[in-house]
Length: 269
Image (tube, rainbow, N blue to C red; front, side, top):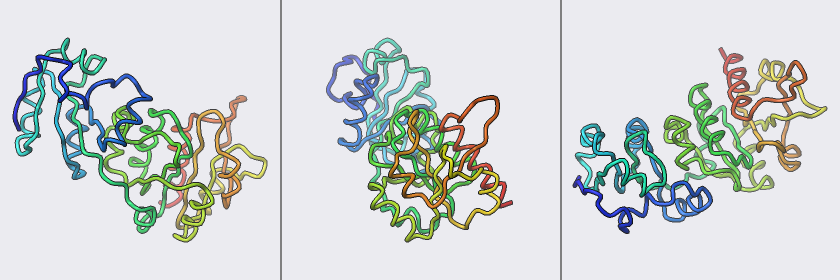
């Protein structure tokens, strides 16, 4: 670890931390450049616990004593600056004190993620990073085993997803699926029943499904607003719905994931 005072916020070595408020640009840059950002001491600790390797860290001066023990054994730069300078670099006030640029780990094969899993969640084209992070937190908290995301789903390692998940995206095994003509056979070959969570005349209610759930379930959740695609519904073995009251037709997708996972967990105990 070597401490580097930040005096020039436009210095090229700070590129990992620039344009952080430009979501479109960052979600393209980070996977292409093989990086992701871990925000806050707690999330950085979870990244290290997951075996991920740092490139550097950007930290406010007053947070340096907390960061130094974490990075003492790493030969990486620790960029230290004032609130005003680091706000210029990142585009926002760093309330959580530290940002670490991490090497993005390679994604595992679908078969490897599914091999020892019994409950997995499939996220189809969910675009809100907050929802993605909240679902990962529910998956970790409710004892599910893995998450699979479709090609157009938001990046689980985007900074907001990691933060909202409280680092759960660094703990829960996950990878990307192909399109449904490939994904559905992969799931079935691994012994999973595909359960689509949706509003549909053919749907069974969640409580009934949970009481009779098979040993291995892939719970599929759809994008905000439109829900699941026709391909997803056609690929499902069963369609499941959460009964609602007072004219409300559905929950936010992250809330729906938590309710469904709790119901499946309760049926097992």
